[in-house]
Amino acid sequence: MSLDNAPAHVQLAVDLIELLEINNVDNAVAVKALELVLADCKVKLEVEVQK
Image (cartoon, rainbow, N blue to C red; front, side, top):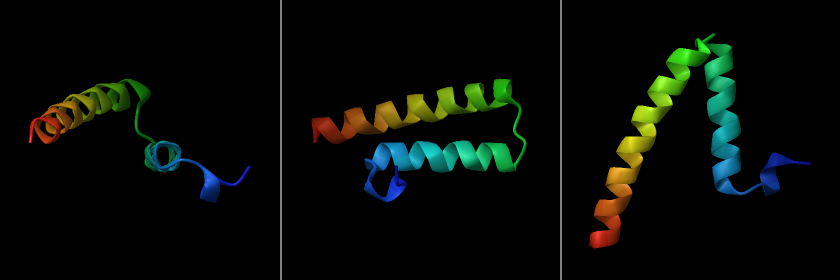
């Protein structure tokens, strides 16, 4: 299966996984960082929805 035809969120997820792996980011550190990113994105999405 080609990623070219995958949904944007799948493509981004694969890119993020690759970035974390290439940089040898510890999984526990990655999870904590991604939780912060997720929280930030949710706040920004909520602001967008309210506009």
